[in-house]
Length: 304
Image (cartoon, rainbow, N blue to C red; front, side, top):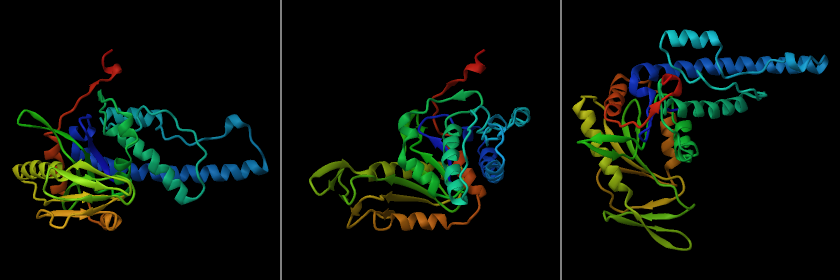
């Protein structure tokens, strides 16, 4: 699961110390998974035992994703601000199979990621329902490896102006500036250098803004910042669509296209990328985060 390091203009913990939180994510993800596996096994054993000799309901143990109070206290003392500080207990009957358990964990881990990408210990941004339900963000996060960082349409301050970029994916080997096209199944985008493209479906043809405009602006901004901070990592441009075909006979130099015919293949290639997190990758992430804008407010407990 990729790390969401920035969403729009929401405040992010990664902005405080990207090196710390990037490494902490990998460690926490592993720790919580092992705890979940142990809890599932314990529940299974208890269910088997209760089938033979039912025990009082009030004594049954349930798994909780919330950490113990002593763990939270230790983390606050060490200034290690984690996902689980103030989450409510999640009492559930855990799946027995490892596959179902992994799916369960991915869903909860994604929700915690959203929290981490929209708050710090003292500040919080209002997470919109649109972001909570964003299928593209969820898809990319859950499909890409832990070593990938996602900046989801971040807002940067460039020469005193707010500039919203396309999706930025920072892998150990390269940065992808991505325009993700989602439309009716089997629709066709007719690409050109014009300001508008045609989008054709079985019933109609509509004009849509050329996605390359935002993509090339994003590439220009990202490339300039990365070069300025001397983070040696190549920057690429990608049009990605799982639902549609992109017909672009003569695309601009350097523009990669992965449409319905090849989108899954592109994702699979990223999944197979076993390269660990690199220093220049984190350096590039830190450089981009330093330009990001954040709209947040103080947590209530910090105002008292």
